[in-house]
Length: 290
Image (cartoon, rainbow, N blue to C red):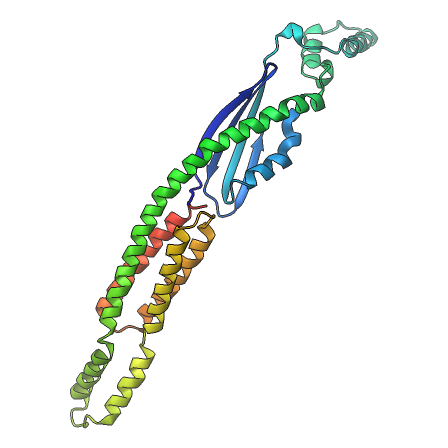
């Protein structure tokens, strides 16, 4: 079992580039990925999304990427013909309009343009892409460790909840074994209170049978036991299980609601309330499970 909340950061570098990568994930019902990275690396978004989807199946994942050039400035290959052409164009414009050439602004504009460098976006991407995916794979290691640690903590809480539900269902089962006798005693009491002259004959027995059939909770208890067994088998697996656990808990809530509506025993009603409270806590925990 894995949680959905984790954070990690890594770096990968060669003699020319350094890639810094951060992964941050939080719980969300469905899988969602957001990227923020330099425009030179944006072409890798589809491949990154596929790589992340192989590891993460649920939750909102945010990927932050930064790239730094490690080469000295004198080793940066500049596109001087293009830079000279921008200078001539600016001189021509200023000469035509009658003004001085703003060389400081021209320098900033040229410096920020990809065309000022011999390496364009495509060549930078080809050089930096292996570093990007190396940083991603390195990040996955600690990222997955954190998610497993969170998942283990959640699993312990869910196991406690499962055991509590099992104990409550067994107590209800034991209590319901006296259900028919309770119905008969209640009917006899009502007859004696309201129509004491009415004989206690087979009609009481027939009513007891009808009411006992309507109030029978054996099927609900059987299904509750089955769902708890299914939950135990989910806990032992290594596949993403958050959505399946949500479904099982939903079915358990339904069974306990039906059980509570059928019973006339106040002690059983109290145990049903305790079970529903435990189920609500478990549903909150499952929101953090992948």
